Image 1 (tube, rainbow, N blue to C red):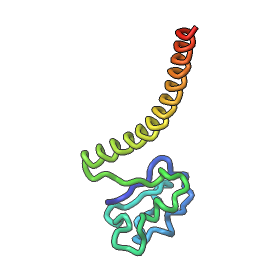
Image 2: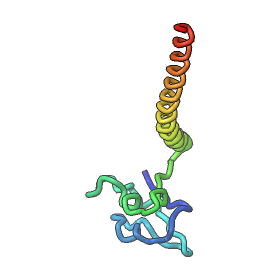
Image 3: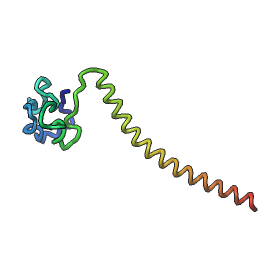
Image 4: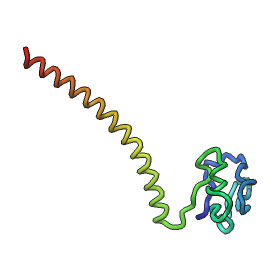
Length: 115
């Protein structure tokens, strides 16, 4: 799978010297990755793409989807990851608050019945 440089690139040029295939170049001041040369660092010494590993923005260099469904599933996975993390925190907070309120109401009800 090839990679592409996004608009989040800050033009630091850290990716240029680390690309093992020399796929990254500067054309008219814009950093680009040649999809014919980029192999995603597969079959190289590296376990992760070097343009991604060295990028200080974390989103300056991303996978380029080859087809519609690949792009759709990547987007879906990112959204689900965000929702799952937020929902987990949300539900834990909600449960804690709800159980506290429920316990308080139950205590009030018990005290009013005892009196």
